[in-house]
Image (tube, rainbow, N blue to C red; front, side, top):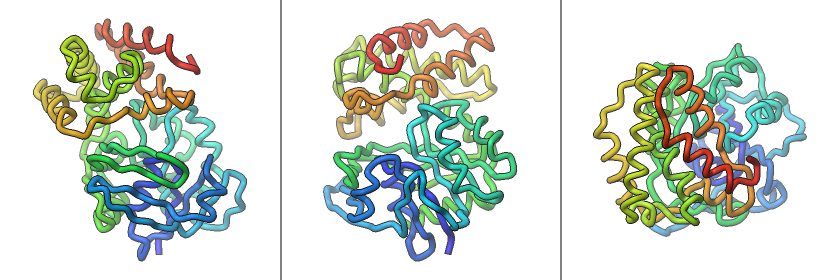
Length: 306
């Protein structure tokens, strides 16, 4: 049996924990909240077809839990707010040989983990999913669900293939990327407009944002700026990807973005991982991004951690 530690008991952590086959993986969830509830209750997943299922992890752990388990995979599913704090949380559960997996948003988030766990392999991952934690231990998976994994900055390994196979066996649409950094930029093309604009526009969901012609045009301009940043990093993304992202979003169930949900809960939001890091790359390569600058300035007026 393999041992996996899922770091984070939110929508992403619980959903993808449920996609690992329990006959092959001992699933441990490290909670920063909901510890008492999950210790005594199963996790409930509400699926896109509105059926439900429950699963119980092998163990529920808290930050100060004693640990004698050697984890094959440490899968980080937290928001990217304070990477150093996350690394400190992981360290007591880490041993040389554990593979670090990031299922998180943002760009250039891998370097601190590589430096902290230099003797371990790092797999970078992206979740293309609409999922919300409606209350402790209850995850509403409303649409999509594809998971993309790849070694950073490029090329898969045997461990990546093993993990992808496990997710696929558990019913997850999981694929392997040869160029995960490029895929991060494609995900960023969605995250940069939709997440902040959902707050700035007064709490609108994805359908409401797209149905407003001026907002729709702004989304496209923001996506194009991200595409130019990716190009500076030698990742060519076809301009048609913008239309594809817009079309796919228009087809999905109207969705409140994760950033909007965090803002409504007065929780910190992922400004640096999504916006600041993109701006730093643009400044390094002298890329003009007036829309992204404007977006960050507007967003910071709304945030509780600006």
